[in-house]
Amino acid sequence: MSCGLPRPSDATAIPAPSTAPTPSASLGALRSWADLPLDPPGRALVLVLDQGERIHAEVLTADAIPVAAAADAAGLDASVTQPNRVSLTGDPGRILALLDPLTTRAVSIRQDETALRWIPGAAPLVAIPIGGRPYLLGGLPGDLGGALIPSPQRESMLGSLAQIAQTIDGRPYATLDVSGGCDRQVDGFLTCSASVVGAPAGAVRGEDWWTVHGSEKAGWRGLPEPGGGTLTGVPRPILRAVEWIARHDPETLAGIGRYERCCDAWWHPGIPGRITLDYQRDCETSVERAGRPLADTGDCLDHLIIDVDLATARVIGLAEHEGP
Image (cartoon, rainbow, N blue to C red):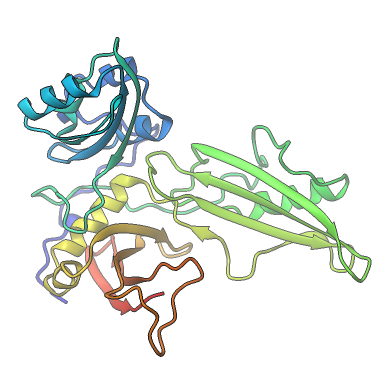
């Protein structure tokens, strides 16, 4: 892996925003998205897109034919999938300008997920996220009705959950959902579990999942799920900065070029700035062969796992894993 990599850390990192990410000026009249019946994931995505990116939009409208014709004239890729549904791919600003709030019934958008998708020419500047426990003192906020656990076990379990739940930047989650329940085991003892699923501001793909377990036998101080939580709640600006670093390492770039899709990501508590990327491709064959069984779903994916240190702007780990 290259040691001469241009490093975002060579410049002064801008402070992390104290509120949700602001819209990119590159999208011009971004506020016009508010006039469209855009799904919630799409509203989160348009806030963190950069100039030069492409998106895919599924549009439900009165008549797809004229919309597709106008899209072709505007230089967009358009496909009529149903008489009232059209699929558009291209510049977000052009798609936005095309859609009429009066005739558009529903819009869903998603980011370009191709492995070699557009990245900016200059290294994105982001602050190194410092993880923390935002609910340690005040407990979990909001509607906790999803935790179907009787008292007093409920209070103890939720208290334990608040103590272990960490976020990538130490701030409360932008969205948070709490669930839980209990079962009577064959030995007669009651066991309960409680979980919190949260996504930080700016995350458009992935979320964190923390779980604790307790029982009459072991006590009601909830014990964390073995192996820790599932930590894929990475804000998109951080993911894109890590992606830029990976794409500017020659050995890593060569590996990425052999894959199709970008990319799942997860963070590591206690290691600020360590982010892992997971690029994927379909296995060369979907037919089971000796020594390589298919997954239960019938899917078979190969993975390129890339560990990046955002603080030094270097790739520190690279490994390929054959599916499933």
